[in-house]
Length: 137
Image 1 (tube, rainbow, N blue to C red):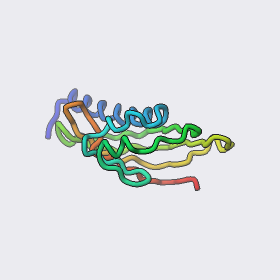
Image 2 (image 1 turned 30 degrees about the vertical axis):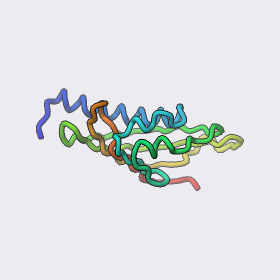
Image 3 (image 1 turned 180 degrees about the vertical axis):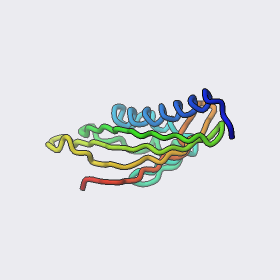
Image 4 (image 1 turned 45 degrees about the vertical axis):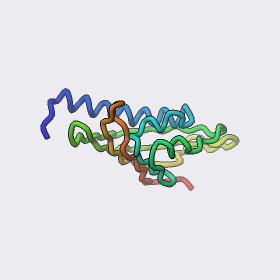
């Protein structure tokens, strides 16, 4: 399918913003609002599989004593058509449980493999699957 460059860039930007919004919500809001980033039947695969917004809303939030930051880079979005896209994002996650002195070491290095879909509310994740490259034990 052929796109005008401006429309292609707009779709890529909206999907990239969704990737960044996910990290912000998980890191700073404890997961509140996470479900709204997904399509109605959206799938999140991270430490198990959750399907649908109700399952995402029921996901336990990270303990309040845990500090977490996701750093995403090399975001590559491929537009499939006017209502779907897919992407890969490199991820480094830092997690520091309260009372530890392990700051500065990433807990997880990997990739997000995403499928995006255009909904009446804008672009949302149809699926987000996490693949570990390195994990601190």
